[in-house]
Image (cartoon, rainbow, N blue to C red; front, top):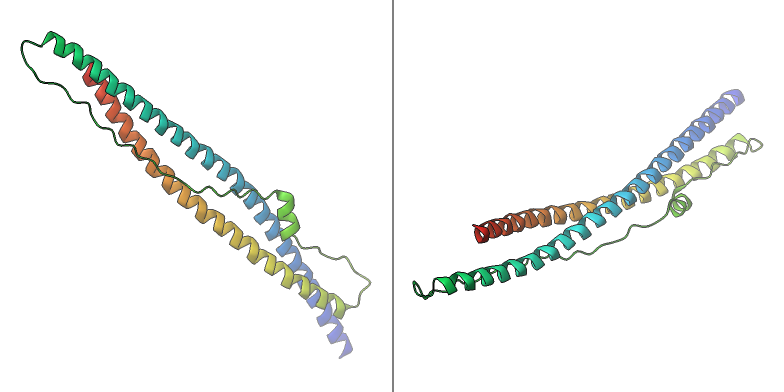
Length: 190
């Protein structure tokens, strides 16, 4: 009977140690995922910043196009003064802007490791029952850290998805404005 109990305790101990190793591996993967998401967030912020700059440049070019229309219209009217008394009216451009709340998800890998790593004690001298109890406690802590890591990653993914939607809308708007301004320039030159 005592042998069965000892064998069962040994199996539980081995099983809990394997579980702890799996948790440690999962937390390591979560740490790498968080690092990748941080890099991706920087790239998205740069893309959004560049789109905002393009939008500002389009506003400036719209003013220049309006000035060109005015100049060419004046010149055209000067030569056509006798033929007609009509004046060309400048086109109105719509300024499409979107503001965004940029959250920086700038925890470092070290902070992440501090928050989400599990220390696996190497205690062969402890009794099998104590090892099992200690491992179960470590498993509980590890699972709690995994949950926290998963929630952090999920929150960042949601934030990045919202940012991607903003970037897509800005890109589409910028593309439409750019095509319209190209058409206006073509009309002025022709």
